Amino acid sequence: MTKQRRTFTPEFKREAACLVLDQGYSHIEAARSLGLIESALRRWVSQLQQERGGVTPTSKALTPETEWIPTVGYMSAVLAQEDISRFLMQRYNWRRPHQFNEGLPPAVAEEKLNAVSGIS
Image 1: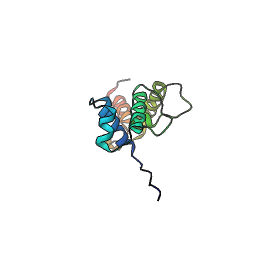
Image 2 (image 1 turned 180 degrees about the horizontal axis):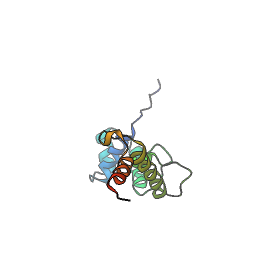
Image 3 (image 1 turned 30 degrees about the vertical axis):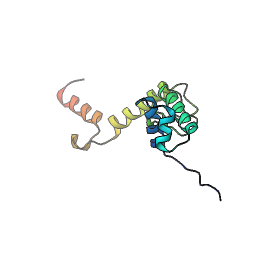
Image 4 (image 1 turned 90 degrees about the vertical axis):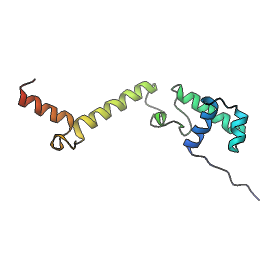
């Protein structure tokens, strides 16, 4: 009879690692209370520490902040964040229609207002 391998969501892994990192539990206490093998919990704690330090994970990310960072293409998390920020600012200021402003994107509505009011 083979034993079914258990799988855990990234959220569960993050919460388990937070017991050790943020709430002061020992690895042994946290692993026992959650019914885990201590070595698995140690791996999750180590991964979470690295992610909090800005290291891109090699396995599935535990934190949402590091989930979108590609493994190649950016030299650091800061460069990736700047690129994503530029994309979002472009998307939300110039393309996304707003329920106010007569359905215009915020930047377009501001340009229209500036033209009407004489502000350049």
